[in-house]
Length: 153
Image (cartoon, rainbow, N blue to C red; front, side, top):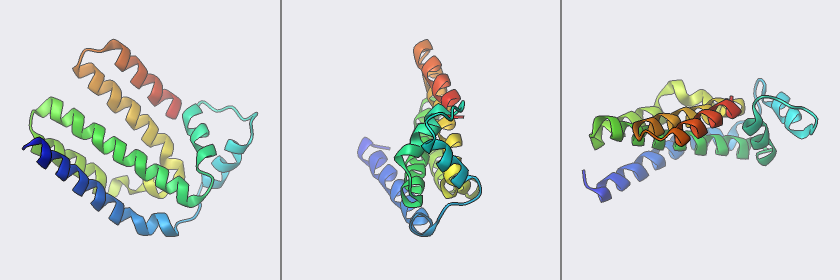
C-alpha cells in the first residue's frame, strides 16, 4: 500500500467514524455519571487520581464539546492502534483492519457516547503509546505512556 493510499484510507476511516457518531454528538446530553464529573471539575479542591480526565472536563463543559472531545480521543486511539499494528505486522492492510474495527465496533460506542468514557480513552492512549515505545525499545516513551495512562484512569 503506497503512502498516499494509506493516508486516503485513514481519511476515509476517520470520515466514516465522524458520520457514524455525528447524530449522537449533536443530540446527546449528559448521562449517568457525567453530571457528577462536571461538578467535580468545577471544584478546585476536588482532587482525584484522574488528573488529566478532571482537567479535560474543564475544557468541555457542554455535552456537544464533551462528546466531540471523546470522539477526537477515540480517533487518536485508532491512529495509535494502526501505528502499533503496522509495527507488529508489517502489513498496512492488517493495521487498517485493526484501526477500522476499533473505530466502528459497537463495543467502543460507550467511550464516545458517555462523556465519562474519557478516562478509558486517555488510559488507552497512554497504554498504546507505551506499547509503541516498547517496540522501539524507548524506556522514556514507555514511562511517559504509562504515566499518561495512570493520570487518565
